[in-house]
Figure 1 (cartoon, rainbow, N blue to C red):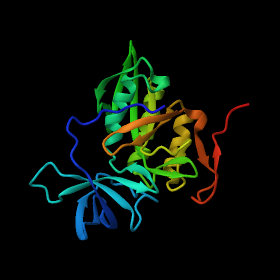
Figure 2: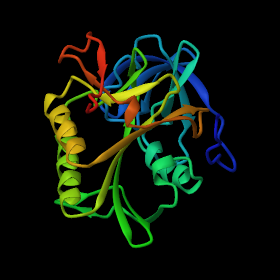
Figure 3: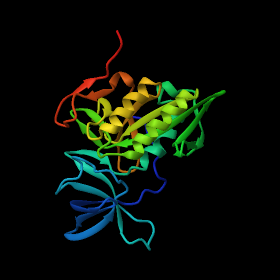
Length: 255
C-alpha cells in the first residue's frame, strides 16, 4: 500500500525538458521550449539506464534568483514511471518512514542524532530504543535491473569504507544497518551490484559479521517519496558473476 510522504506547503510549478547530455556529475543539458538549457543535477551517481538521449526530465524552478542554473532536474520519465533524480531525498525520507513505523525491524526505534561520528567519518543516523543504540547508513538506488535494485552504479570507495566502519561498530556491541532507499517502484529484490567488486566483498563480510540490511522501495510524485514496499534480507540478491548482464542469485541461507 502506498504511504504518503511529506508534501511541500506550496509546491513550485514544474516543467518537462528533454535530456541531451551530461557535461559533469552535477549538471545536465536539456532542451526546454526548443532552447538548450543547463540545469542542476542533485545526484553524482552514473544513473545507469536512467539518463538517455531524448528522455523526458522533470525540472523544478530554482528558488534562489542568483543561482547560475534556473532549474533543478528532479525526475526522469522511464516509459511512464517517474524516477527520482535527487540523491538527498532518501536521507529526508528515512526518518519519516521510521517515525511512521514503516520499517518493520526498526519499529520502536527513534532518531537520536543525525550524522554521528563513525570511524574517520560520519554515519547518517544514530538511533535509540531504550538503552539500545544503532547506527544507520542510508544509500540511494535508481538502478533496477530485472526487478533487482542495485547499488552502487559506479565504484565507491566511500561506500566500502562505510561498510567497514559499520562492521567495526557491530564488533564493539552496537547494532548497525545499511538501508537502501529505492527511488522507483519497480524493484522486488535488492543487492550489491557487480560493478564494484570491493564493495561487493565488503557487503558480504559486513552481513556475515552482523550488519543488517533492508530496502525501502518507493514511488516518486515529483515532490516526495512514497513507500510502496519493504524488502528484508530474504529479498537480498547477489550477482552470479561480475558481468552485469548475468542473472542474480538469492542470498545463500544456512541449512
